Amino acid sequence: MEAFLQHIINGVSLGSIYALIALGYTMVYGILQLINFAHSDVYMIGAFIGFYSARWLNVSDAPGYGSFFSVLFIAMIGCSILGFTIERLAYRPLRKAPKLNALITAIGVSLFLEYSGQIVFGATPQVFPNILEDSIVATFGEVRVTKFDATILITTFALMLILRHIIQHTKLGKAMRATSFNGPWASLMGINVDRIISMTFVIGSALAAAGGILVGIKYPKIEPLMGVMIGLKAFVAAVLGGIGNIAGAVLGALIMGLAEEFVVGYGASTYRDALAFGILIIILLFKPAGLLGKFTVEKV
Image (cartoon, rainbow, N blue to C red; front, side, top):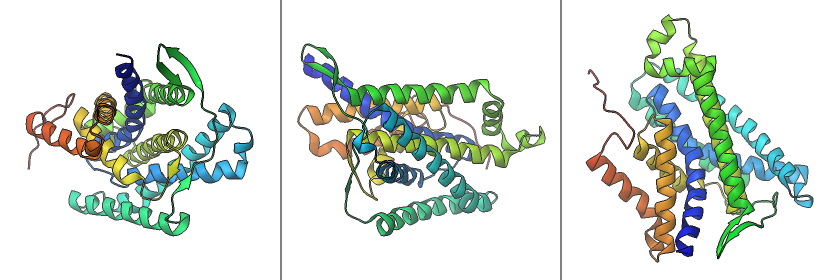
């Protein structure tokens, strides 16, 4: 029983990281009907921004929450600028082009970031700086909650609350919901749709950067291709919950994290990465709209 509870804690911690990345996928899809495959590489860039900013600030000499939040803030700002730039230069010119053109461009941007990362950062994996010391903050029998796990859960929960507040209680959030419902109508109502789309990329990229920093403290090996597999898993989580549905993305990510942890914990670690695609196939067969998604009628 104690091992089971420990797996739940580990799975929720992992699922929280998936959720931060899955939210970026689902927000962009909800507004543009586009799968932004470059999003997972923004997460990778966020990890490297954190890596170099930690070295620049020399925070390894004084690890703690001050160092953690400083690095987190810098990474989120850096990736927000990157997300804005990607949308402005790569996607906006194709706004009225066929969706296939934008999809191919997203794949191209993803490959560009991955292999540019290998040139700039080097292909050799790097060890993320020690910006936060780990320790046991609570024990229940043999079940342990570490500072890393608590930090991941609290940071993810806080960011999700901020995102919910933005979407539900601000003018920006109201405009985002209107644009998601019907972009042309939102434009007729005076909403600057281009600005709203750019802000969606900015917010999603900031969340991806936070995921990169949390992965850095929990699993401290980073490299330019680190976004490939975790990006696919986060995408599956978004589809599992219902692509375009923010609550669904979080639910799908937690399910993914728990499922992966139990597969590894109970002796089938070989199938860890295959699990995501198995879940995707099952969902597409039996509930194509996802757990919280809704079927829509599209005229062609």
